Amino acid sequence: MRMIVAMGCFLVCRVALGQSLYPSNWWVGMKHSTIQVIVRGDGVGKATGVTVNYPGVTLTDWHRASSPDYVFLHLRIEAAAKPGMVTIGLTGRGSVTLPLEQRRPGNGTAYAQGITSSDFIYFLMPDRWSNGDRGNDRIPGLRDQSLNRDSMYLRHGGDFQGIIDHLDYLQQLGVTALWMTPVILNDMPDRTEHGYAFTDHYIIDPRLGGAKMYAKLSDELHRRGMKLIQDAVYNHVGSYHWIIADPPEKNWLHQWPTYTQTNYRGEPLMDPHASAGDRKLSSDGWFTRQMPDLNQDNPDLAEFLIQHAIWSVESFGVDGWRIDTYMYNSLPFMNRCNQALTDEYPKLTMFGECWTAGVARQAWFTRNNLNTSFKSNLTGVLDFQCLFSGIAPAVKDTSSWGAGVNQLYQTLGEDFLYQHPANNVIFLDNHDMSRFFSQTGEDAAAQKIGLEWLLTERGIPQLYYGTEVLMAGISNPDGLVRSDFPGGWKGDSRSAFTGEGLTADQRVTQELVKRLGSFRLRSSALRTGTMMQYVPQGSLYVYFRYDAKQTILCAMNTGNATVTVDFRRFRERTKGFSQGVDVVTGEKYPLAQPATLPGRTMWVLELQ
Image (cartoon, rainbow, N blue to C red; front, side, top):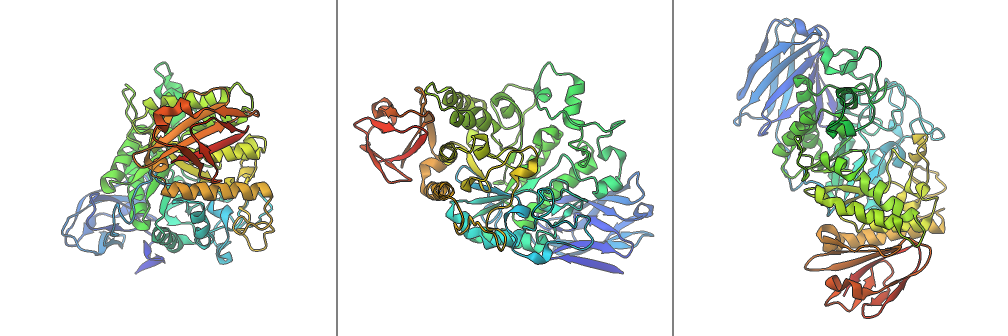
């Protein structure tokens, strides 16, 4: 007897013998038309044969694994195949059914649209942003039954419904794309709030609302002209994943005689002088004891991961792909996976977490102009260098010498190493580091300069939740930078959604983001224009964003003292214009005469 367990309109197929299918379904009309199907269940490997009898679907091969609980098979789905239920017979072990569905319409226009410099990303942790459905706070049968907002390491109850309830707020900020920490099931005993320890790739975490609500969130975003980014993890899984409990083959994991942790270094991967041991430790060491390291060079595992990526985009209408711990993966595998996604979805874009030192090393992981043997096809990276060697030292330096702004200037001057620097995602902070407000000693002026830079610099701006209302926190421990968003829970005394209980500095900073974020939506120069920067003079740093339609002058003074801005220096870009209008305050500055820029202040001027 076959049983179908529904997850909204998505299916996980099981039979009486407890067998499961991966992927749980597929589609007709896909470029990825020959698929690997994994059948998992007690003793399923004892099947003496495999049969498929469905028009337009051919069984090309099958094999067992070292574990007796798996059968691997490949199905070729012809162009003439129609949607329906494909029965896979397992001689002596029953059968299982693979749903073959019609494709989602609108590839590249309604979904899989890609994330570009025209977008503004808001990054949040679903468990910590807003609780819209208290009924899913605890799910019977899951290991982690915690629910306590007073503990940074327990679950707090945020979910997809809470996000849907407040999409208006994101649009008020000018946000066009939503990135969440992973939404896949994390059936671990603890620390499940962050989502990075998957335990079943094909189940969306029911504590967030499950597949049905994830699909609804995607639909609501797209209805508003917004986009969805999924956080992908190929490097590791949670220690309670079925891959760990019963690996098909021993070499699905990187095995060591004793627990061996990665060195968390990307440099050995491209260092011509690196030792083989350091290089192996970078790629094959485990991220933590709770996150075993996957061996993507195993062809069956590689196909499992690639198909899951395609399945996620097609199932939920994902537009962009953020890739966690990018540099610890097998990089040839990553090139293959990235290519498979873009073959199926030509406009889909991907950006990777490449937390390393130096612009050249960061550029090595994406499409670049380096003369090296390995060439990456990754669309873009999270631009750690623009943060660590750019805006952070710039706003922390209050002197008149301008060492900080010179560092920012020099870092951007190395953009020649990238093929497409505008594809990089720039940011001030995230869930793994101290919040920007804390990094700057809770200096509201520094925060405002940082935010104005974020929304005017080249690249794709990403705002971590709460940065717009001066949320603070030091990353040791990491739970302190993952606090609840104010107003996301009934009874909160403060609310970023309504402004209730916010300080004057918090309200002013939030209003700055709203005004500049909304302006950016209408500004072709900021979204897709060219950038030109001028050598800093003391603590004054000036750059322009411009195109044939619009010119924006950005001037930051990071020092405490006032500086004089002589617009004549910038004739190359100001020619033909008579004044600059501050897009935040509306104040006008005639370009024919010098102007005084106060200390710890930034202007964003539209030239007229």
